[in-house]
Length: 136
Image (cartoon, rainbow, N blue to C red; front, top):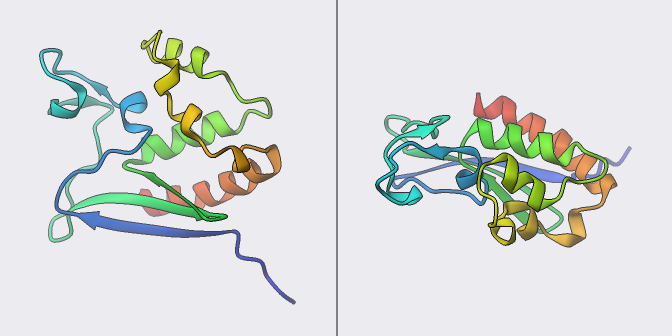
């Protein structure tokens, strides 16, 4: 029996911290006097440095698109959003995140259109759940 591989899961490490398209929306910067990227404290915390390896980046390749995440909280958030049969609007998601007026910058507006279909999202969610196990 042939088995179709719908996605490739990776965990990579880098010396420098990397942020994903979801990082700003998931991790609230607690240092109000600096920009998000210059902050040193976040809630929830970003993934910690793994000694001898670096900062983790969790990846999922699906139909030629590489989706990456920098924490398990980002993966959980992505699963939550993609699980809605009718996707929530970026406007609503930015309001929930406390960043009204930035809907054009929300990660969902950058999500590839050719993998937004419910059928694709169901397969992506299955792979994200496998990735989540690796992230924990």
